[in-house]
Length: 391
Image (cartoon, rainbow, N blue to C red):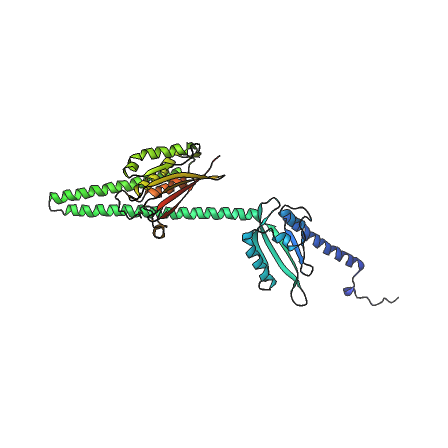
């Protein structure tokens, strides 16, 4: 019996075809399972019908059940945070125009419970119509909230470390500069003393040496105070129960003689029941420095006043200390206000060492707070100290 011609290389049995189809189905199932495990949402936009299908995972990301979100683009787009919409639509339009091959954007979207989550949104045109316009687009939604939160914390920590390094560099530079200046003055005067022709000249030089010694002592005391504050800032010495009104009033009483001499009226408008957990010695010092500044730089041509009041929010208390004194030229000095050894009132006062506001800022930061200033020349100055309420 003669066998018919039979080419095994081109032969495809029904069994083969059946299993090929099963293999394809298996690949689809694998991809589907992978998406479910990764909790990545999928969206599918048919441009012709303007219908957008959202997967169950997309719905779950923002807290909705299956089929709770309508099959429209607006159902998703309307939930995007207002601050993120411009970048979202701009990038998507660029992809539709063919300006970019692949669309990718990060934005915040409002969930069912009113909170916001960060979404990584990706998309790509997979079909075009006869006019070469996009007709079918698919993409994914990925919840990246935890990643963004971690990233935000890292950025804040990096900023904190950077600022601390800048302050440390500034501090060491100031220490080095001031100590070198004093040492240089000592050396110069000692050389002059060795070359002095008589006891009168030596006596004059001894007076100069004492003056430099006093200045050096003050510098060392200042630096020691700052180092002490910075070291305490690392501890938890901020849990004293303090009545703000009483704390402020004691400072006002201690400055009553100077305020009366200069004709400055001080109004303590803090509530008597205001209590905060903090470090009393630091708050005393903060009140003292800011109130005494208001007295020191009062305007003799005005009915001078200092007002202390507070503003509360759920988590913070803001203490406001304002005066109608001579003010500061903020356009000229705004970047120097809280720096060491900076004076900017133009009064050439011998008691203005330029250290008070630096120490005050250091103390406020030690209490995990923030200090700000607003001032206008010849009108007055207002300081605000914001402290977090502790439960």
